[in-house]
Amino acid sequence: MQKEIHPKNYRMVVFKDISCDYAFLTRSTVETKDTIKWTDGNEYPLVKLEISHMSHPFYTGKMKLVDTAGRIDKFRNRYKK
View 1 (cartoon, rainbow, N blue to C red):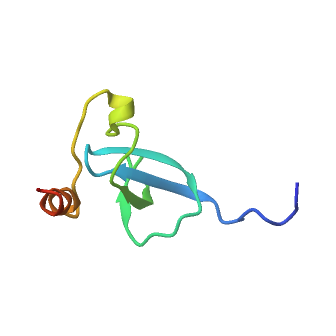
View 2 (view 1 turned 45 degrees about the horizontal axis):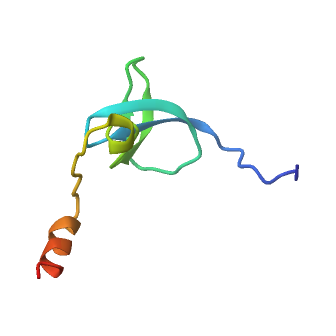
């Protein structure tokens, strides 16, 4: 393996799925300005996700429409014919 190609600034970060209110804590180097208080009482950086394994139809077996930017309505209007 090549040396000195991996980042050195790993830290604990909370990733939160905003569509189903599921959150998990893991190590990451992602930069974010948001923070959240975790169940252990400590405050961690927060990354908001639109889809995770808890809300993705492949993993849940349920078809669920997640439309955060109106993309589905734009598509339907464009191909309404």
